[in-house]
Image (cartoon, rainbow, N blue to C red):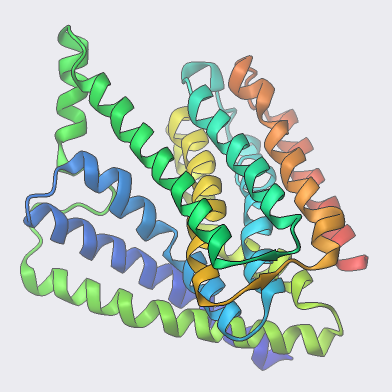
Length: 326
């Protein structure tokens, strides 16, 4: 048991480090090849930061462990709202009235309902995967058009904003001085480390589930989901400390959409994904409730105070307890 926990921790560490390396390599390669910074931010960074969750879900599907594949996604989305927003709010209140995320939040809600409707069919197939990826393409196209229209707006303020968007230094992982050898090194480390980390995490999670005599779904919803949400937690804590409410909320909303549409969509091409019965009864609805919990903060501008941070964090602990003890 102890050795399996060590392997799981090593797998998570590999996933985080390899994912970061892949993002740095891919971002700087794209910028060197002349891809606009705006496109890099909307695609390369978004996909790169979701690479750990994607590899875990693919490995789980290939090992016939749908509970880990879907638990990783559903559990991560629950953790993203209750834990990733709750813990930073305990440190510093997040002023949600200082940003406008209503449009992307509405899309996240739509993606959540769409995913649940597909899951209720009992098995997610490659046909459902195509539908999820088509929905993702719509989200990306909308984000690109919104950003482009904003850049074309008149006035000095809009021009300054456009310049910021075009500045590669604003993109996560961008380094104007990075040479080709370093870019190649980051890409190789990322492409080798991600599958190794995913393999370690999935295999050890299966063994931990057997040792504890619990379902793989429980391990996917807890250990795997929390572990793969750690990068989002770190990003949101830093955003809260810097009083960047748009980054904090955007991080959670974007991650949740990518988890549902991209990760499950791609993973479904590696095999059918049966939806565990306990997830149909409970966890999918908790995920929807957590998404709806954000509504007054997004549309009414309620600040995420320390009191709300306590509420969110307690709700997450209660959820984990119910999953483990069920």
